[in-house]
Image 1 (cartoon, rainbow, N blue to C red):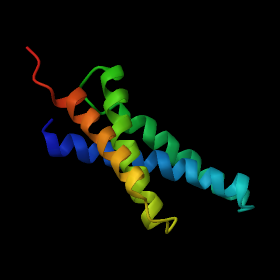
Image 2: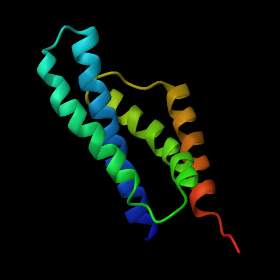
Image 3: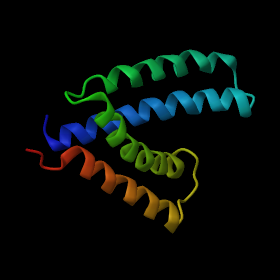
Amino acid sequence: MNVLATIGLFFITAIAEILGCYLSYLWLRKDASIWLLLPAGVSLMMFVWLLTLHPYEAGKVYAAYGGIYVATAMIWLLIVEKVIPDKWDLIGASISMLGMLVIFFAPRG
């Protein structure tokens, strides 16, 4: 799997996880309809399935995915929740992304 496909799959996976959790959050904390739990459940099942599509060891996939998840969460914060991430949010997300790149794409012999 090439670099762009791998990172793209990680972003799609993160969106599925964040969406599932966000819909549950809306029901639990914002008094939204309980029916949001249906698409939340589907989204979380899709998240789990997407993680299995990577042709690498599970632990390595989970560790590298964490970096993409943090960056995607910052994008979600901006686009969906209309909150501008501050410089510390951006620095933290950048560090997470760097960690993902090291874990997943380091040359190994």
